[in-house]
Structure formats: C-alpha cells, structure tokens
Length: 235
Image (cartoon, rainbow, N blue to C red; front, top):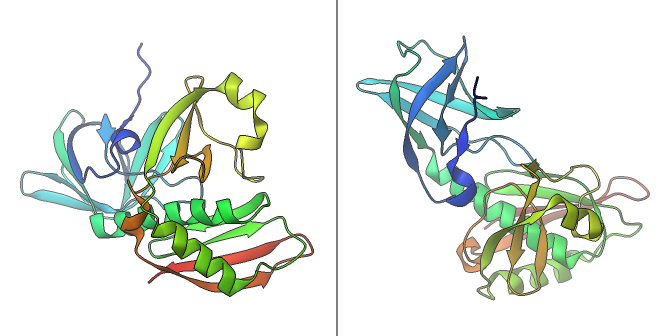
C-alpha cells in the first residue's frame, strides 16, 4: 500500500497562488489533498489561509498544519465534497506575501546579530527573534543595517544538501529551539546574496530583498539574562 503524501508546491514556487488538487481524506474540520499551495504552519511561520473551491461550493481555510507527510487544511463550515473530488486551492496572497517578506527580513536580522536564535515568530507584517545574548543590540544601528541589507537587492535562492553535510557543519543551524526539517535525507537551504545568510529553512521567502520595502525595529527588550528579543514590522 502506497504511503499517502501531500505534494508541497510552495517549497519550489512560493509565488504560486492557486492549484488544482484531489481530495485524499477529510474530517469534521480538516481536508487533505494530494498537492497544495497552502504552507503548513512550522518553523515559526504561520500556516496559510484562503479558499478551497469545487464548482459553486467553497470553504474558507482558517489554518494549515502538517502531520507527518500530510497537510491538513483547517476549516469551520459544512461542505459537500467527497474523497476523489477535484478542487481548486486559492491562498490569501496578500497575507502570504507579507509572511514571505517578514520571514526573509528575519533571516537578514539573524545575519546581523552574532548569536544563536532561541525562539521566533513569523507573522503577516510583524515578527520577532530571540537571541542568546547577554546585552541588548543598539536599536537604531540595527534598524539602519537591516534596511541597508534590504535595499541591497540581494537574491534569495533555494538549494538542498544531505543530512550528512549538515551534520558535518552544525554551525549552519542558527536556531537552538527548532531543528531543520529533514526531507528524505536532505535539508532545504536558503541563501541570501553571496554570503549574507545561509541556513536550513522550510519556510517561504521572496526572490529579492528589495521586495521587502522597509522595516521598523519595534522593540529590543530583555527577556532573561541570556535572552534578548528583537521585534520588527514591515513599514
């Protein structure tokens, strides 16, 4: 018996706003498809929202989560779909694009602070990283440096390395609290520019830093002796 999986279109094309799919399974408040453009919550990034449609019928997707190899699209309404039906998936693109901009911004922030990340959150317009630091970074200096990087028109590219390569280079992992997703013995890597940032990540990102616009540093605060939080937002 073949193992059911949901093909993750967003991994290779985060700009794809909709796709056709087939229903594999469903429950009282979730639906599983053979493929999807909906990003499943993980790595600090929120799950996508949007619509799933079939003919004249549609349901609002309120969140997207992953369970093993399957992605569950969460809803709170009645529907008349059946297993095997073909549907159209449409993400809330405005929200997703903000998430992409913010996730890339946090990678840039990570490149500016020479410390491991102890936690973080990627929201649609706001985000934060917590760093293993015993001092607070200078807020204005950090903002200027971050916006300089954003305006530098740096390309973001995706590649893959083996789990063995990652194990030989543990410093590639910038986070202390979240382990990088290992997919079939490989690790998805995100690179910004030639040498600005390079780390494992399963999230969605923009193609070029210039798409972000400008960001604001909202807070730099003390969350413990060795925990400093930097909260940012899109302008």
